[in-house]
Image (tube, rainbow over all chains, first blue to last red; front, side):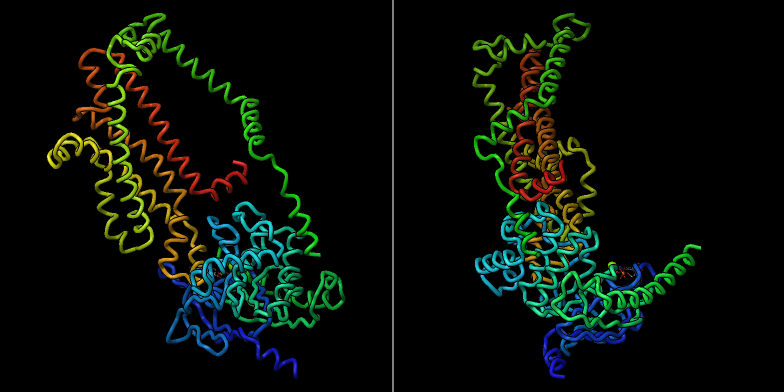
Length: 282
Length: 295
Ligand SMILES: Nc1ncnc2c1ncn2[C@@H]1O[C@H](COP(=O)(O)OP(=O)(O)O)[C@@H](O)[C@H]1O
Ligand SMILES: [Mg+2]
């Protein structure tokens, strides 16, 4: 009970209420999200799993304010982001996005990239921002790469720097869209540990889209499995493995059980998605 | 565990050769490759063919042209037979005049074209306003502008610079605009997320993101500027390398004609190299990225 109130006090609770999103490319309606509701507590790591093309990115983009929603509403900490009167949320530094393909500015060094947010928000002078950026990159193990351009470092380092660029703004919510998708297993492992370490330190709310079920259970407090398009919440699996978690967790009995549970639900949706795809092509 | 892996990768990025050693290493590496020899052999083969045609065998029609021997004799002579050599003031007068015109024309075209192109890429309404007109004027061959420019502008200098500017302006504007179009949407989203104002986005995303295209455009545009400058000087000029070419031709002195042509080749090459060097300086990130990809 005490633990619960502590969690509720944390910032960055997202409440997604009956959200529907219909794309309208040239008069052909595509319903990407249909009446989808989700509650994400502040400081929670919430993993979204679902078949490809089901509308996960669409949901994330709506929270980030990249596009409008057709119906429903989204709130962060009780404040309305978007709803019936305001279909498109404003972009803001309280919700930071880490992009699927990585979006560090290639023309800025890692340090300049990280310092960019506080500088343009005028939260710090550019000198202060650069100092802070250098310090935070060093904490993330990138100390000797701060003067490098993103094109000169490995994808893993670039991704870590991108997360640092998000965190320097003290966001309430971190939105990650399959950030480790194209990485090999070893790099992924390092990324996971680094993200968990970051989470344990900052307690930021994490909204994380992934295909990788083991990743979902290893990182998440909750795994939300969504249906094939249009996207709806199908099932929520709670992961009660205590933190801090280490890589050995993955071989535990409990982990395997959860994996089976998630796998079953996702498989059902994947089969549906595949059949739907066949129907569309036929 | 994380920290140890990171430490290991940090220490491995050291001890590349520095300073003078690095320069020597580069030179050595350059000459142990095949390409510089191929280049040298290539140049000699061309010169030799030219000599055979004009001076060796004096093939029909080619005997009217000055060969490499005749040209270099005059070019490097203190008392050139046909009036133009590296020791005559007149030679440099023509070069200086042409270069000054190019500097003005290219400078004007760049300082107008780049901002205009960027704004056209950045703002839909500016594009709708300007783009159709530019697309309509762009296909008109630059020589078709000659009479109009002479009617419009007084003297020799005005029309010549106008023509070179115009040609180069179209190329620059279009490339700057396409440069903005080429920027990945996610950079705009990232900038928005990080709390940028519209102006921040312009300065930090639009301008640097379009630079690679802009400099590709500038390299083409300086070539186009030379092309139209020489054409304009040939039609209406009083000085300059283009004028030197027609003037020599009219007076039946063929050596200065060819000297002016070769000079144009060298200066043109040099000016593109300068543009490229400035580009590489401004786009360190781009150069490094390409190097990383092994290109
Ligand atoms: N801008 C758009 N216009 C039209 N349809 C779109 C657009 N973006 C996405 N879609 C469609 O919406 C569906 C969901 O896309 P998305 O949210 O990217 O899926 P996911 O991230 O789950 O793979 C897909 O079928 C996709 O084709
Ligand atoms: Mg997606």
